[in-house]
Length: 98
Image (cartoon, rainbow, N blue to C red):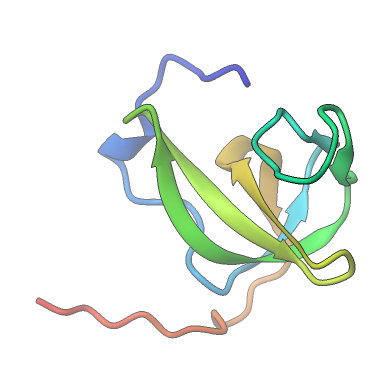
């Protein structure tokens, strides 16, 4: 996984929980997906999934947990590997707890 020099964490995440997203490129197992061989195809370009979690990687980038309903896989993806599939309200409404 090649990260850009930009530190994404300086900005808010580009996707929200519940967003419907489309994969922009083939996602292979890099060894972090248990039970599948390294190189196994986890998601194909154009596959649709939903953001179910947002984490960070190396204090630089957001990692989006995407649930692909057809395969029932939850795969960690970088923002550059995803695009918003359509504009619609998130499945899970976020509240501002300030």
